Length: 291
Image (cartoon, rainbow, N blue to C red):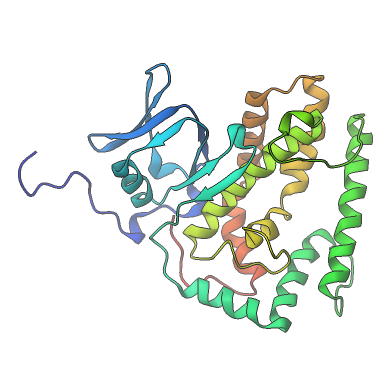
């Protein structure tokens, strides 16, 4: 390569596609992510080489046995594609790389809302109003609304079990003992973790913080968990009961992953996030976020 010639063309915010324009995610395990010329490639455990169009991806979810080179990290993040580290089949969400393309204006707005008790509960009410469109939440405390949500979710589990004719003994998950759960709980755990990865990458890329929540607290990703509850009914809960019936007692990780991805695309989750996050926070984006 001639001296002075750059390997990659400089990427600017204006040249990056927005969150809503990207494919949601790819899950990779047992292989190596590196660069080849000006592109990113994945080399799997059988030495198959797969070029990855990272500029069109929202997130790469890296599972067990995966490695990534320093140059690959630089290239992926320059394309505003987040890198998340997850457990096998996305069963657990471990960490996400922070994307360097966002400024701090949206973060400052989020901080300002969260540190004021009045505005913080107003944001929470907007989030709960999505699940309770006919309820009058004015004057309700956060504890009261969380109680309403707990009752709604328990009823939702039971209704889905009856709809799909699936036995249900309650939501159970023990870290490190995924296989001990029934099929419904296994699907729910896997789809939850995949959803957290997508949301974490979107939140980072839009300049917000996953650590600053309005409903959840004392957990690693409160804002991600706040947002996840807006979409779990269809993407995780309904999916889990539907697949339990279809898989007839045998957990199929490929079916879970592909069906979850189909639903994410069908509901156009990334486009909804680009609208829902500013709406939940009570205004427009501080800037036109790019991803």
